[in-house]
Image (cartoon, rainbow, N blue to C red; front, top):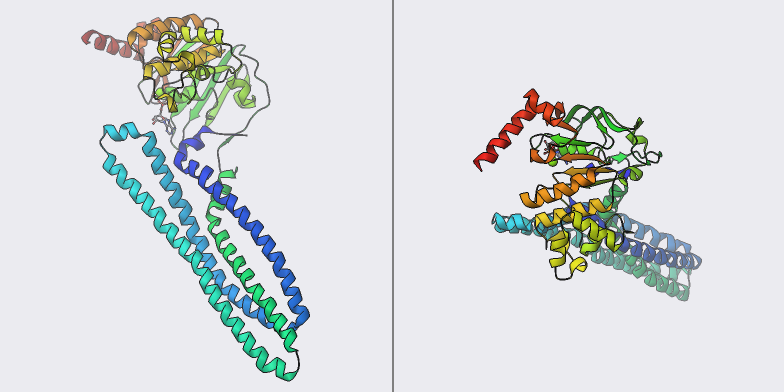
Length: 478
Ligand SMILES: Nc1ncnc2c1ncn2[C@@H]1O[C@H](COP(=O)(O)OP(=O)(O)O)[C@@H](O)[C@H]1O
Ligand SMILES: [Mg+2]
């Protein structure tokens, strides 16, 4: 089973991080507390047995009194448990705010919204503090309350025993003293057990969140097939595919499209028309809401998902650069690649020059998310990464959009050389880059409004012609 990407686009990343770090830590503690509880309970059993051997009447009386006390304390424990849910919520919210702030620091600074973010951060952290204090004060109230009640019970018992049992000769003073001694030893153990219960109450919130995280029935899983994909033979077909990130709000309508092996298929359309979404269905980031995607006559859902993904590479608008060396970033997903191949891929992607200019060349560490590179450099690394995989199916989603027109043309040439014999799905803003495509598909608001060869579509003077004319005019005024 594979978790669908849509789970991650719905969950806040900070909340996930919180669950994976802080809450797991708390659960770790919960295991310690449980172990502690276990040993103390064993001790309790031994003590209680010896008390019964000494005097069953007194034992029953004290057990009843202590049970009553324990019931009273249970209410407090319940309160702690309830507030622990709020602690989890506040903590998760706090981490979300912090993660967003750190990831969005450039936007925050550029929009001079530090003050706004600072307030958001203070509110979130104040919230955590308040709720934690509330939860802890309930937790800590259990101890002194338990202790004073227990002491009262004990004193009561001593008085009763010495005024009734000893004068009646039902019990010898020595046995009574032994009994009381055991009871004295018992009190701190009961206290410890109660404390541990209180602490376990604090862990209920985190426990629940982690359970929620591990649940599989409420998350969008992709059913994995078992047919091994060994390579494209004929075509990838979309048969009346509908898709919506939220099934009630479709983003793609009735897409019927054939992507032939060895051809370049270009997707054209205004931003928001659904090009990226359409392309994301091929690696099965999402499954269609209705209709089918068929590869060589077999429903894509019957393939083992990784055997399909291994045959394709994607270069998209937002490329992810890992915090490691340039070499590892290019070799990502093709770890067995040698230096010669890596260098060749970098060269084809027009990245070799800038890599060699870096202080340590291919060994330069790139820092979190590649912050030390320009957008165009990141994109060229992503192209090199895709080329190194020598994929059968190559998806280029505005892969050259962050480049200046000179590098774009250079890379375009390498990509065209590379496209020979491969199946390429390309999405490009600049129409000039797709004029050689075997098939152009024009999307408007999630529907295919035109498809065919570039020249033929131009001659039809339809939608593509309008886009073409628009870009041409803009080009001239520039
Ligand atoms: N992860 C997502 N969750 C919900 N809606 C999305 C998501 N990604 C894109 N959309 C919506 O789907 C539509 C098509 O987006 P997209 O495929 O990215 O268009 P394009 O690539 O043509 O610019 C847009 O209306 C966009 O708001
Ligand atoms: Mg897009």
